[in-house]
Length: 151
Image (cartoon, rainbow, N blue to C red):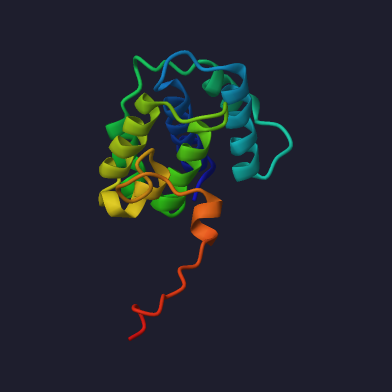
């Protein structure tokens, strides 16, 4: 893969990350820092190349087309698309919690990657089956059959 292709992919990934962060409104300093660290990790560098850092700073959520970015990455995936969706989901919780708008973003991106909801449900706010969440104490309770249950 040529340097220009790598740079194009990393910029698209940066856009997906920033799209995830900005889905709920203005990007916080925590989210922007997290995006930078994720990109540094992907590139195996201690600090982002100036062109990538500038790309992150100039991100315009109003001009970003998540479907177009997803189509490009679907056609030429730089990694497994599920993993890329996971990394985007991590961005949504980097400031503490995923907002409903960010949940919709993850769902839209998963769909744009051609994934079924079952393939990415665990990355959304509706990650558990229907019904109330059980506490650890509730999960640890072991039902013991009574005299009438075993007969």
